[in-house]
Length: 365
Ligand SMILES: Cc1ncc(C[n+]2csc(CCOP(=O)(O)OP(=O)(O)O)c2C)c(N)n1
Image (cartoon, rainbow, N blue to C red; front, side, top):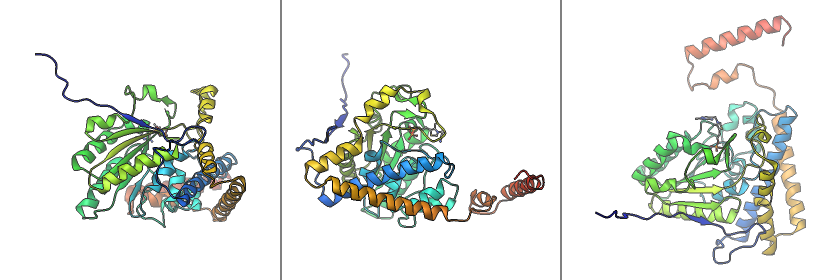
């Protein structure tokens, strides 16, 4: 018996804006001038806030942070396709997305200095806090999506974000499978920034793309230029529309690059070359988006100067508010281990305070 082909699969790749900001007119999304400016402003604020946070960390004024430079299109553009009533379930490398969802920069700063209060988004309770445990947020995203239909919220969708390294976790595969079989309205957006700390993509997976992993679960998958805000927006918008229409989940792979270190505790020169980084500099998402706006005649250098001034003022105010807080008592982290008081944690708190007392007695503190 001859071998039969029972199905054919292919994966599409979307590019709308080239590296010089030239748009493919056939694919240009239908976005208003206001939305385009809003997106560029969000990407710029994210870039400038990230740079300031890195400086603060280097000066000993902020804890360890995951820097985001280079990934702004991949994480900001999807938010434009969401409504406030949709859910956002992220990981930790999407500062601009969180700011677009209403998180204050002061809270982001607080969180990275150990204040648990910083993880609360007072302006949008459908934005989940940062998830450090890779891919653990993805089954939650599916649960929220399934629950929204169960509760007959017909319009709600869930956007989940994660990195390329997270796709090696069981939670990623379980989430995709559950989402597919439950037809849950969830969009999985992988920010493929080429590295999981020092692990390059080629030893993370044998798959040619991350998008093709969708095929195994029977859902649509697409790869997009993750440094092109228009491509990212368009792919997410189409996936959101399908999800709202009860046509189920989508996996989107946004191909991008982490321009700096994994976190401030990492030295990327140990595992990647300067040439690799330089090649990605030419693909900078902000440079090409600004060129696109200028070509459209809706942006100029005066607006750029004003934007940078406004972002700086906003960042200065957030840093000032953050630094004017009195430090919290050293045992406060014990309050946040569980929502309730637990004997085992209280015993640890007592031991910690006793030890701190002894250190003080001996002038070590
Ligand atoms: C379950 C789990 N295993 C290991 C880690 C340690 N860890 C933190 S970040 C990271 C790399 C993640 O890479 P990726 O998913 O590509 O996201 P990126 O940091 O590049 O944004 C690892 C292994 C973790 N946080 N969670």
